[in-house]
Image (cartoon, rainbow over all chains, first blue to last red; front, side):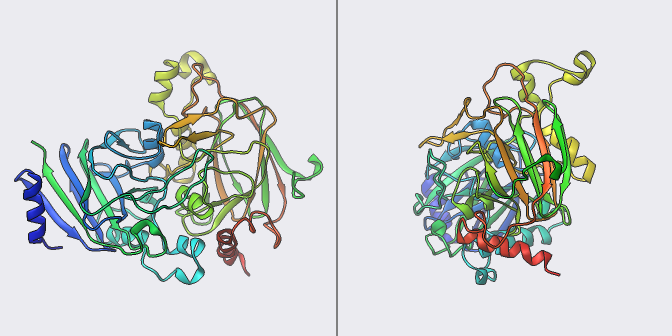
Amino acid sequence: MTKSSSNAERKAARGEPAAIIRDETVAAGEPWMATVATGQMLRIVDLEGNQAVDTLFYNANDTEERYSAVDTIRGQRGIYLTTGSALRSNLGATMLTIVEDTCGRHDTLGGACSAESNTVRYALDKRYMHSCRDNFLLALGHHDFGLGKRDLPSNINFFMNVPVTPKGGLEFADGISAPGRYVQLRAQMDVLVLISNCPQLNNPCNAYNPTPIQILIWAAG
Amino acid sequence: MTSSTPRSHSEDLWSETLKPGEHWSGILRRGTSLRITALEPRANVAALMYNYESLPERYNLADTLKAQHTAFLTVGCACYSDMGRILCSITADSCGWHDTICGLSDAAMVAAKFGASRFQEQRNDYFKNGRDSMLNELGKYGLGKRDLIANINFFSRVTADDAGALHFDEQHCHAGHYVELRFEMHTLLVLSTCPHPLDPDTQYHPRPVALRAWFSGPAPREDPCRQRCEENARGFRNTEMMFLA
């Protein structure tokens, strides 16, 4: 994961603080993990537009506490995530809050793709295709947190558009994101961030063309 | 409602009544059907499901909704695990909508809504909450907080408007409403009858439900759940691969 000059230029153009702790580009289809300390900012940038970013959070000091989609939905009495959303844990605590969002809507019902769900959703011969769950499992497998498949609850899909109708219909729709749009979160506890930059090619969540994302972490002033 | 429903209670494997606020767990073998009946209006039954032969395989909210292009559960739906397989399918439903996106109540919520309550004063009528009820049952199988996954809330209807805001339907569940689950794999089922977390009732008022199990056999070749969509045909195929001798 290398810093590019274009990242620095974008950063300067946005007037971001100098004390950037991490500024990394994650290639399409790659996993990524990091720790964000209480009070720090995490920004995820959809560099080329319409890229689903499958994301989970764990309490870095007690990983049995982790992001919960249903606690988040219940807590805000709404299904979409945007500025002001409190991302809640399975124990009901606010882990992070979304403080800026230039995309406008993010999904937390669509979950992560997996080899097995691909066989159900598309065709049995799609099992070989790379998936977010494989990214999650590989990232967890390479770290020493003692986490595995039991620790993969329903995640957030930043920049993904999964509209639900009043009659209860649900579909994966074309994205509403665009190049350079970002979502910014403030950590309310020390969190372990687990990301899969989604490799799905069978639905419009990545506009059928997965692309890189940029991730920034800095200490809030 | 379907031919799988037994004509008389003499065919029952077992039946039980869950008291208001009670939590319960049990093993439902492949080919067993379970009818859950609301004995009073406005019942809620929170449910978690795990493959009893491999507990890391469990109900997956997202895969269930995505495969069937729905945001709720009703007759014809399959409840998917995270492994592209089906834990159970819904073979009958007189209620029409079961929530699976709103989660459980918790101790803080119950205390804030209904006031303090503990065993010492109220004995077994103390106010239960969904999360602690689930943790109670999960602990009996070596499971815990890591296994608090998104649940189903049978008998509860919560709709999302165009802005995504949720609306709880207070008139949805009537006394006598039932849902039938046909288990397609050996399943650990965990239930709580605590009120739905978004039920605006200002009184703590859980409701009793009846459980009734019988041997129905697994899904036949011609089956409305299997034939609901091509996705379900593949989900049943994946499931049946586990049981071919």
